[in-house]
Image (cartoon, rainbow, N blue to C red; front, side, top):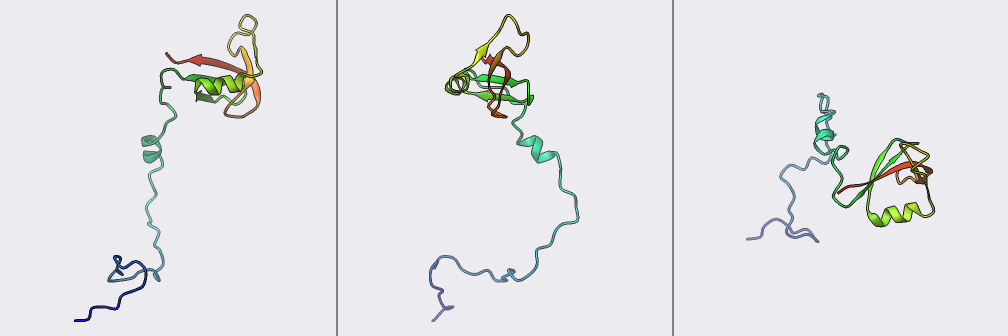
Length: 109
């Protein structure tokens, strides 16, 4: 009763009955779903968690959600002019574009 010859190494893994590694991979003719997976796994419109900060940049128009420690790191040094500027009244580093710009900082409570 001698079975098939054992291969060295992974003794629990056995070869498949039909090894198709030499056959070319076939690309399906159908067009993949462009929005389905992107919409399912998108985090773009998710609300920020409680206690986190949002930073809206006037240069790149990106809204970033950061923690309190990250806001302190980005805000040193910074300039805040709430009476002179209406929308974006903090001049600090944007976490998205990494440039100094006028931003709006908000706290999610």
